[in-house]
Length: 432
Image 1 (cartoon, rainbow, N blue to C red):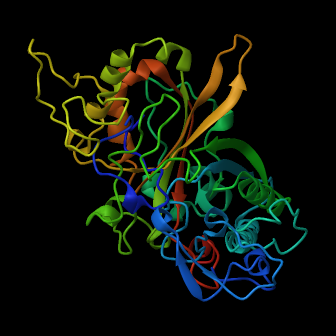
Image 2 (image 1 turned 120 degrees about the vertical axis):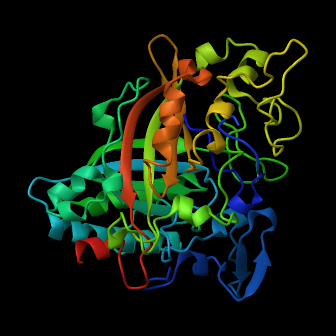
């Protein structure tokens, strides 16, 4: 499991720097935020959350939303939402296949509907038609909706010549135990929000908008720690209890865009992918019963970091650079040669880097009481052949963590740049 992750903090800039795994324009009508008196001109800074909300004159009986509910992400922009924003408390990943007989025309109409719905919901408004009222009392709650295209989409729509080389299928890995029914897909949608009902409302709206044009291929539900659950913003923990996300690239780094986003003048990518990115999606089951049998020292040696604070076993704090050459009194490497954090370091993989933005998941227990739980791994990069693939190949050859995880589903999706005002996502591909 490649080890570069995204911090739990609501803005990536608040994350520490260090090492790895263990680590819209408003629509027509009046939005819920305005009805609840949370949109206005006087700015209120929301502390570490990094958002700004204004309060306008409102009816005396109205109650303003909390900061979590009021936070809004813009739909329109250079990049699609849901990539550089901080981790959200709830998430849904869903893949669709176009219906038999549906082609480019139907796909364009679908992306137009989806974009309109996403824009409205991200602004805290109801859907244009037949809203279910599931999120009636809530604000935007940092909702993001992100759209991508799978390899098979281009053949279904007669756009094979526009399919990027970077979307070629991922190679097979020896650790794969993939369920083909829960992998790939023509279209992919990522939904995240800091309120479970807001996230579900968006999922249901997207499914209804698909109508007869597309059917769900697979769908997965995830979660992260809720904003404000810790005393201060900190890197998230995964279901193994490890701090997960220390070495994630940060937007403040000078080379962030070139590592994560397709350049506007990319030579190897079609023009419609300008400012877009590629998402690798993997359902990674954690074998928690086996993992929890390890001693604390055993777990830390597998990862290469202290479980308590995420610091490298070579010493310091979470952000201290890992000393790969440090040895103990017996001459043994302090960070084991097969430790996950050592293997996944970019400087050990030709500079390969990806922006990890995962969700944890738990889908109950099997007949023997074994938890079906783990990570809905989502990573972003300008080129998966230079980002995800080389790191995963190296992990495949000797990662100590590999005996405690199982890759059960996989997908690779081309995620175009953000839609400008008046555009829908993918318009430059579908109408170009």
